[in-house]
Amino acid sequence: MVRRLLHAGFAVTVWNRTASKAEPLAEFGAMPVAELADAVSSADVVISMLEAGPVVGLVIDAALPALRPGALWVDMSSTRQSEAQEFHTRLTAGGCRFVDAPVSGGVGGARAGTLAIMAGGSAEDYARAEPVFAALGRSTLVGPAGSGQVAKLCNQLIVGGTINIVAEALLLAQAAGADPAAVRAAIRGGFAESKVLEVHGQRMLERNFMPGGQVRTQLKDQHNILAAAAAAGVQLPVTDLVTQRYEAIVEMFPQADHAAALLGLEQLNTGQRVGEGADQLP
Image 1 (cartoon, helix red, strand yellow):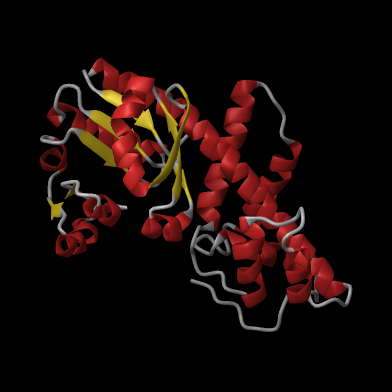
Image 2: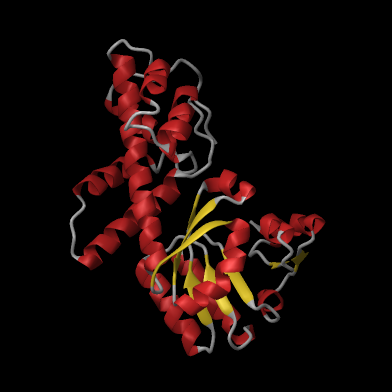
């Protein structure tokens, strides 16, 4: 994402809690700094991309004293809606602005500048962020602060559920005597077609569970989805089941790609296995 911003002509200062992770970006034109205050003090726009909401909150609190009045903070992490709303409250109280803008598209989308960006905030703040978003992918304003996280949770709800359904389809094909690779090819282009069938279906056939996404991250998203559903007063029974499936494998395969849902399914079906290759696991 930093490389896309640099390519678009933005001056980018970079900071990471682990300094060595930011340093390689210097060769592309970014300016790594060792202190958070140095990263944000002259910035018109601050972008955070961190593991989860509690970490985002800690970084915002640490950065607030150094932020310029009116600076726009764009959090592109995946957090809970309630956390994003709290970040908005904290930053506006400090004289700054906030947009939550989680993304979908993975490492490939980040490299290509084709991320789907789901933004929550005021129309004014979104318009200010749009040139930045244009360097990274396709953005949509979906509502007030916190709404970007709702959209991302809807995305992850569909992704998590579909990964499990694709795993079930391939295992059924294998167990019933059909060629799962041929079945996947046959149904592509029909109503079952999806990015998950394309990308994660192939991963399952190859037994390639190197991340990509990660089981532990998908499970974090599943819990956030259920928290949002509880706050909205709705029940999501299928999402409950998908969450249970990821809970069943997170201790064994925390860093594996979330396509490792297939491994959990195979554990339920002793003696059944998709494909013949060795498992590729982190």
